[in-house]
Length: 197
Ligand SMILES: C#CCCCC(=O)N[C@@H](Cc1ccccc1)C(=O)N[C@@H](CC(C)C)B(O)O
Image 1 (tube, helix red, strand yellow):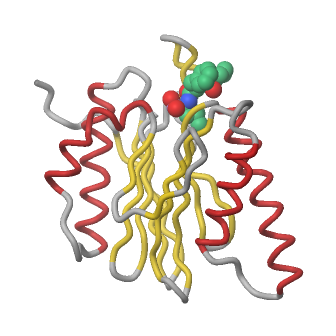
Image 2: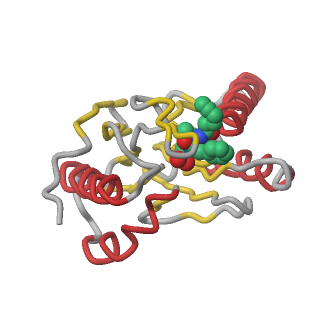
């Protein structure tokens, strides 16, 4: 898996490949690794498909209850810290690396990376999954402050496509999700349109 999320002025872009593998076998070539937690908060999944499905189901339910009881929408920070608590407390039994990202009126676009150990780190450019190891240099080189929506979307797509070209556990299509004050835009594009070599 290759997953990524980058905040920009006015929102956040999330991206993921779509390959589910068991060894070298591709169990699903078109999976959706970007799970919705609330209306404006999403989560990119990597690691065990089963563990991350269960994890996101729990967090989605807890946040729904939290919003009912508190009478207000959850912020990205609340969602990320709930996810981190569950990941950390169950770290011996989970294989889950997630990126929680979204938009809220308080802090606007935000991204929290929660890697395998269960630590939670707010980041301006978060990458994860097996494919991310191939694009640390690329993302360090291409990242800029104050990118707009289209520039951020292109940066995410290009980065994930390079990881998909080199990581055997990443492939399929590139799914993206843009969350802004005005709503959510999801799209997917072919993952193999990059020149090899
Ligand atoms: C189908 C089936 C059985 C397991 C599928 C399954 O979890 N595959 C995993 C790899 C893995 C992980 C831990 C144990 C075994 C196999 C997988 O493809 N993970 C991707 C993300 C998830 C959310 C789809 B990615 O990290 O590569």
